Length: 242
Image (tube, rainbow, N blue to C red):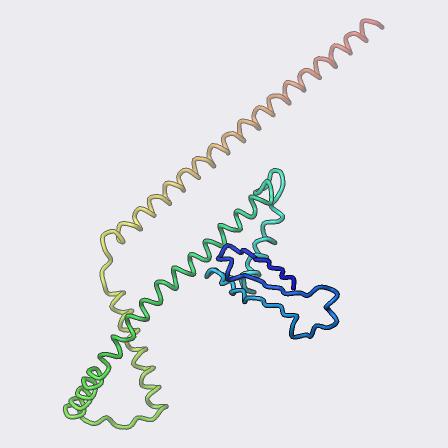
C-alpha cells in the first residue's frame, strides 16, 4: 500500500486542511474493491467576509450618472486633466452623499427611539386628562345646536371676511412710523435731483447743437466767399487775356 499525503496551508493550522489519499499499486488495482480506494478530505471552513458595503442598483446608477457628467470635462483647458482626477472627484461626491445619508439616519433614529417610549409612557395620563376636560366642558358650557353644513360654511366664510376687513382697517388706521414717513421725502428729493440733472443735460445738449449749427453756418459762409473770390479771379484773368 502506498500512501500519499499532501497538506494545504491557508494561513491556519495544517491539521484543519489535511488531505489523505490512499492508493494501491497498479498490479493489485483489479482485485481491489471500491471500498478500499478511499479519499478523505477534511472540510474547509467558510471564509467570512468582513462587514462591508456592497454595491446595489441605486449606487451603480449614481456612479454612472457622475461618470456621464464628468467625462466630457476631461482634457486640456478643462476641469480634469486625466481620468484619475475625475475618479477622485467622483469618490469625493459619493463620500459626501454617504456621509449625509448616514448623518441624517444617525440623527433621525435616536429621536425616534427617544420620543416614542415617552409618548407611550404618558398616554394613559393624557387620556385621563382629556376625558376630565371633556366632562368639565360638557357641564359648564350649554349644548350647541347641530349646525347644517351649508349654513356653517356660509357663516364661517362671512366671519373670516369680516375679520380680514377689520384687520385691513386696523392696518390702515395705524399711524406710519417716522421712518416710513421720511422715506417718501427722500424718494421725492431723489426724483427731483434726477429731474434737475436731466434738464441740465438737455440744456447742455441743446447748447451744443446750437453751437454746432453756428459753426456749420460760418464754414458755409467762408466757403461761399472763397468760391466768389475764385470766380472773380477767373473773370479778371479772362478779361486781361482778351
